[in-house]
Length: 256
Image (cartoon, rainbow, N blue to C red; front, side, top):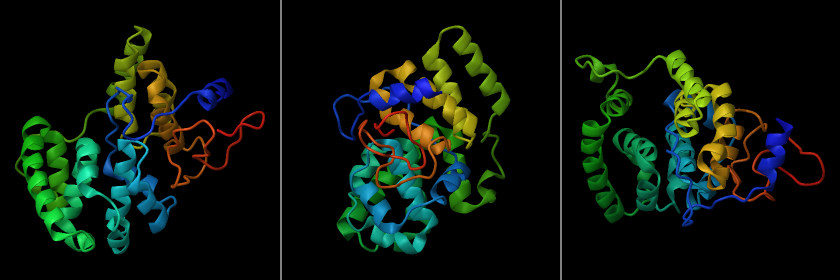
């Protein structure tokens, strides 16, 4: 593990909006896993700063989920955020959280200009239709959070899969040298908040996706608890000289 940390500390990172991006699929954390993450640490100013300039799209999920779980803070958190940009850049995972806030906590957007919300509302409505067609289980889980369990009463769409089978499939892909497929399976387990899977995904991120996935790897290590408590203003950290997580030091003077 020390060798993994040493390698990570010297590799270059990627910034949000760079031309070179991690090609691996974005994580789509389960809502229960996001709760465990966002309730650890953080304050309004830190999260507002995160949403002003997120390091990568997965960070948008964390910032938006913080706004959802801290409804009284959402107005200040959104005051300087470009929600339309976040909607476009965050992918389906972040869009689902923004949609959830829009449907259940509209007062959260009081600091956002009305024309912006009108445009965003139309985009979210169109996106939700597409999500229901292309990813019905994701759309159903979102409906459950918006409307309660009655949304799932008359449907045969499965919400969850067998975690042990996904984990086993990942090992089979790994043994066969199919690293991108293995990473995908480990990431799916990690979505449920499984710390071991988060660490495994962190270790495979760059091997499966290259150095461009450095920031993704750091994010997973942090969320898995390997690097101590979250320091929101730097998470996940795109530079080898930044300190994205507190509580851990590496050999020598170079920080993780």
